[in-house]
Image 1 (tube, rainbow, N blue to C red):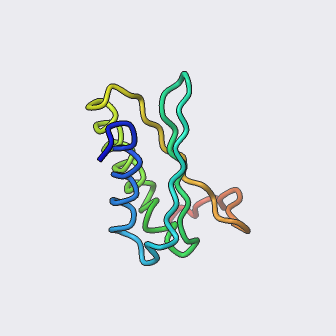
Image 2: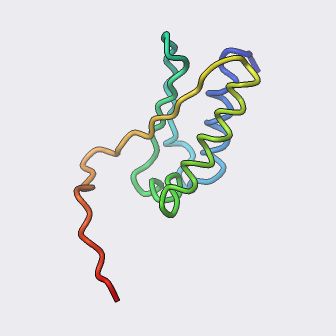
Length: 97
């Protein structure tokens, strides 16, 4: 595993392990003055598995990437791409019981 793409390979391995459509997982890596930006695209049916309840899975993935980045002296950020035709809009207010 090359040091400079260890974060990208780790993210691909991790996400492919938790989704139902591993062949649809795509990770783009960009490096700039802010550090490393990994853009993740998954099958729209797998978005729930990647994000998790209240974003818990996404937070855990970001924490692990931060650790990989620290090991390689890089700041690693994750952007999860919205699938095409996503209908995520403003949330409806919750009903109080």
